[in-house]
Length: 240
Image 1: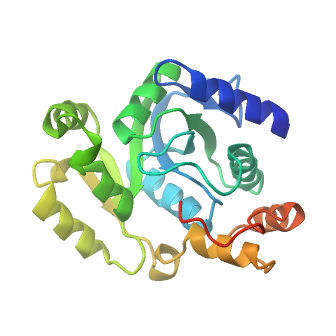
Image 2: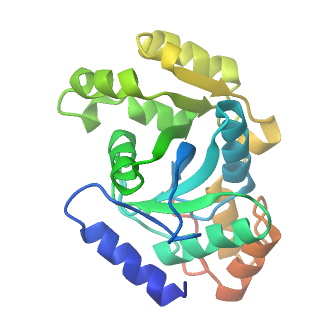
């Protein structure tokens, strides 16, 4: 798909009245079976995103999928246009990362699962989250009644969570024991290497904004950022 077609598809997706999802890597092919999906801003996609997708999919014996949301629970969409983020994910796939490239119009993970179930009824969605997203999942600000919404979700669904930044995996496990003990048995933990866990989209944007080769992205994504001078207009919006 060309950028204009991707942008038009994303606009229609965002305007859909209920939870909805689209596939961009192979729009005509259905998704079926276990689907380990990573919801993220991909602003831009980094090797940390791709490594987490691979590790989580292997742990769950599932197909990996990158899921770009047109909405965010805490902030407006800033940085690269959404169609550019889809293009970068497709470039990563073309480089040999076997990911499905999806988008959804839902901000919360429980609504993203509903969007995937509606669009791909033969798929079995399994969310993947980093530590920061895991904390937001259990933030009562984002629910009318968190127990009433999360109880049925975890009755049907499992989750894969990973460490982020300089936090070891033990810190994630301890946080769950303290803050979500009733759901901890439904969450599989996977550990990223420290050098990968420390990677952030923010750092890549900062380098790109200064006209420097951005670290922690694939070669094709690096060339894409350099050719289109993305992020040059300002330093480091903080969506990740």
